[in-house]
Each structure stands twice: as structure tokens, then as C-alpha cells.
Length: 163
Image (cartoon, rainbow, N blue to C red; front, top):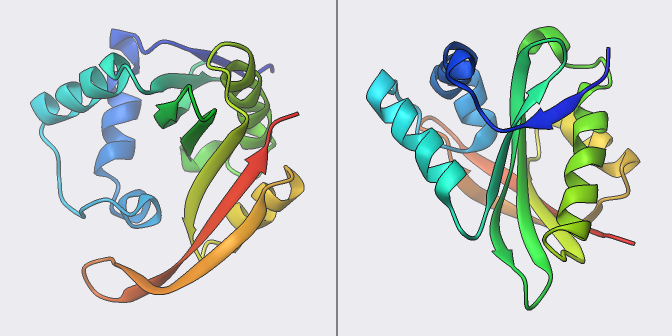
């Protein structure tokens, strides 16, 4: 089944809300670990989709299975930060790599991005391996950079030049 990126629809809400409220996902995305109400999730979706310096898409593979986003898009410098989040059922099945390829093409063609950056916890070995396969390079690892509510975590900063 092919992966597509598309604007969020009302029928995606349950998947996006579940991801937003998943404690393990929150730790991996380095966001404040807490539960978000339906109104807060809707406000988050509105912020992401309405951000003039960003982009937000649902990853669809026969139904919603995650999201990708670009934030801090700087058209003059040609840079953007990216994030990706998938439901557990599709992890390790090539969905992330395909979605990232689509995201990169859009970032380059439509947003004139030359470089994408990301942050990932150093303990997220699967993600770091994927990003390496996708030609992201490690810029630096900041020790004890993120507090997840229980522990200080090292964060790996990576970038990819879009050609």
C-alpha cells in the first residue's frame, strides 16, 4: 500500500489524539508528558496547520497512521526543522522512510528548503539508524539536554542537505 501525505481531516482526530496523548510518544518527541483534552488536541492541530512558518500532514497508508511536520521554515536561509510520528503498528515497515521522502520533496520544491534539521533522543537507536540511511548526518550530541520528567537525556542533532 502506498504512503501519502495529506491535510488532516476530522476522521483523523482519534489517531492524532491517541498519538498526542501517548506517554511513550511524548517522551520520544520531547514534549511535556501530560494528557491533552480533545479541545487541546484540536488547538494543537489548528496551530500546526495554521503555522505560516511550518507545514503539517497526516501520513496515510490506507488510513491515518501518523504525521509529519516542518517547523521554523526559513525561506531565506532555506532551512526547516522536521518531525515525524507513527502509530506502533506501522513502525519498521518502511512507512517512515517513504513519508520522509515525500516530505523532503515538498520541502525542496515548494518551500525552497536546502537543509532539514531534526533532534532525536540518543536512546532512540531505530530512529537514528533510519535517519542515517536517509543521509542525515549527526551534527552533535548534547549531553543531558532534555529532562523527560524522570531523567536527563542526551539529544542528537542531525541535518540533511537536500539536493
